[in-house]
Image 1 (cartoon, rainbow, N blue to C red):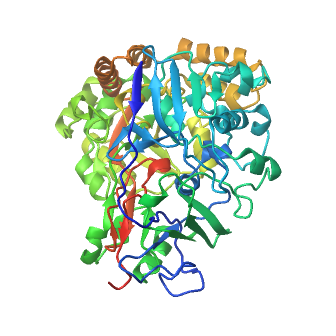
Image 2 (cartoon, rainbow, N blue to C red; image 1 turned 135 degrees about the vertical axis):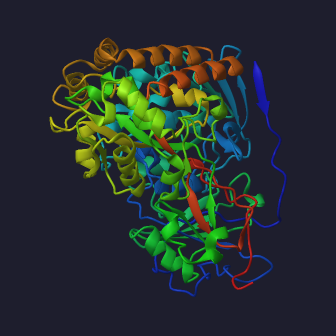
Amino acid sequence: MTTFNVPRRTVLAAVPLTAVAVGATSCGFGSEPGQGPSGGGGGGEGATTLRQANRPVNHLNPAFGGGGSPQSSLLMAMIWEGLVNREEGNLSNYVPGMAESWEISEDALNYTFKIRADAKWSNGDPLTADDFVWSFSYYYSPELADQENENNPSKNGSPDVTTIEGLPDYFAGRTTDFSTVGVKAPDPQTLEITLTAPDYSFMNGLVSLYPLHQESVEANVKDFWMPDNLVGNGPYQMTKYSQNSNATFELNEHYWDAENYTITTREVQFNSSGPTGMMVSYNADEIDLFRVDGDPSALISGRPDLEDQLQAATMIQFKGLCVLPCKNPILQENQKLRQALAMSLDREALASVAPPDAPADSWAPTGIEGFDQLPKIPFDPEGAAKLLAEAGHANGEGVPELQIVTYATMPALEAAVEMWKEHLNINAGVAVREVGVFSEYIQGNMPDDFTGLAFNYRGIAPPMMLALVGKNFNNYNYVPNETAKQYFAYKSGDDKDKYPPAEMAEVVDKLLRDNWLPEYREFDTLAKEAVAAQADPEQALQLAVKAATQFQETYLFIPILWAGYTFMVKPRVHNLTFNSLSDSMFSMKGVTLDPLGG
């Protein structure tokens, strides 16, 4: 049995501290810049009000986090706290949250969490292990899946819980008895969770599986998260919310670690115009920070004085081009053609038009342990031309016009197709489509004369090599066109009710496995070997590297850029560390503020 018993965090300051603010706009709080409701923006030895900008959010209900955006995840992490948190600087390691310690059995199937004796809700009610049991039953109830929330699926569909004993049957509606699920509270301070198989991503899912206050949720099912009804357990409580305008968060005096927070108020200004509008507020000194969800180079162009205020988090995200299941299978069937496309891209040049992204010379970004063990993809136009000839397409002969389909205009993609024209004499273009149409292409429902790839952008959570290879990466793309269409017909189309849930899972799995491209089938086998070895982290890492290398060398996915979240941060903000995971972007613990104008 492995035991994790972490001592209480030491006191960093006498006064509690503030944290995040999301959403920027010139919409204020009816006071001078920096003077929030607490009036703590400017005076004293240190300021206590942090001002942030973020895009608007239409709800803060963690039950519908499946389609959650970074902006909503950031705010929810202020209001609630899960059993564990991620360690700053090592996001694949976990530190205490509501659980002050935990034990994991030798076979990694049984987790026992000790809830803090002093854990309380924001209204002063004691928080116990029973609250977590109820929250699990609420999040994964079949009834919840039938509720609204504007394309934000409930947690019922989350793959990160399917290894919890009995939970798949419960959230599929095959049983209504939650006592059959492996989530138990033998006493108020003990939570026991039983898995059916080791799961490297299990702890990652617990970070944002927040406990909910049963009484307040049941009394206000739709709007329990609104200020007048809200009972949370995180470091802050939302005291004001005006959709599309602003929100205010005050330090939760009942939070177990409140004494280590000096920022007591967080003002969030919502700005639907994105980074451009937020930058106006930033330059007017109305906000202290915001996340840049676009190209930051335009924001600081001609302003060298702002370069040090642009901060990037660890790169655990990647951007690339995924071969699609087109009617014309030329890309699926010709590995040397795909490799030629990959080797003809000058990634340094691509990164120069997409700052602060970095050139991705392999699949795994720099924030992933073992990334440097993957082979590098060189920029070698001559070698690429030679491969193209070996593929039977010398000087681009016989290759149809290729298209990169995407949902937004991106200079790096325009540059990539120019490189294919220059180095391989392959005509190519960028097809920008509305998000819904883009999704149709991913599902194989593209025009018959379309041949190409799709832009793909995703993060890796937890940030480890095992997660990179173990998530069935785009497994529905590496099948023939008709198979891809049938797969999505089963998943969300006309045939989604053709079989009972358990049988449907087997039908879909068999459909893919029977039709995968041979290269992808080999990768899947290697990836499963790595996942099976997760009890031995070093062996699992080496097997995961082997699987990642094999997949990278298929060139079914062509990496182009590595990425991470980026932020504009005023010099008055100190000790703030950024991460590239939406539920752990940054913590206000230990953060201090200089007075405005100081």
